[in-house]
Length: 230
Length: 195
View (cartoon, chains in turn orange, blue):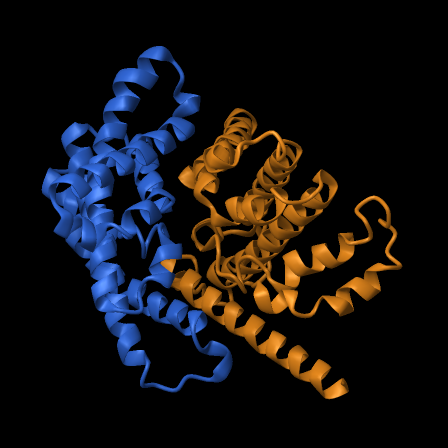
């Protein structure tokens, strides 16, 4: 995060013209880009790896998990940011865990009530959002110090960055592992042999490894390009 | 596997076939960050085994004798977290008082473990799989041992990897991930043993 903070001018400049000026002090776009792409929670900071690997056997599961994560992250960041002046510093950790747990229980009960089959497939991983470092990380690092509007933007960005990675990994694994996308056959089983390893645990690790390598390569390259221009 | 599996089978399955880290992906954060040295990995592994076995038993009792009779299973998550945090705090104080040497070895890892998702995840799997008390004990201990095995093995591999020369983008976490994948593949070879 520190190296990302070292280069705010570019983001800040482009944000002078952004539409959300005033609503979030014109910092909205810079914060969004920073949290969702430049310091992507999964690929760059390697936080919240567990669900990224566990629920991405199919694209559908990944999307539902992403949505659950966005809900919890935005909700708890908003609450914590609203309460940031009234929360005593000494109990802030326990307060954040309690608030996050409340939102997780909400989404968990919602899935159990309306999408039982999906809830069964995701198993304990919805509940494990509580211990997901992304939510607590955003809450501690950002929501505690910033206005509610900005905290919501930041939380949404981090959660969308997470959901995006989940969707990519889910797509790759379902496509290569089962030849389908969202249950529709894409790769014809007549000429495509299903690669079962992709659906199993090792596939998840390997896909994730390549994805992180891609992020490293891409950011190295863009860093080199901007250096060259200057 | 329709019959109730024996305790040994549960223990072996939890430690090898269904390894909590390599098959269920729990506890990845500390797995990646604390696996640079074998001694650190071993310390953390022992601490996780210890805390996991202890808290899963307390959580089992709390779930079956408190939450179910009161009909408040939906509060399971928050209560489990509270139990885990409380237990870790208690154990920390206890060890500090009675065995300073053990405290010195495990002390720094204990607070870290509170937020380790392996601990909470194991408790949730315990509820989903409807284990009895002794099965829970076997499952918890097996999961802890499995986690320790995985992190110590990875620490050894990473030490060797220090001498190799992967392409630049792969350095660090990326190559560790891929190595973990290969390790998971090896652990899947144990699958025949469970039956």
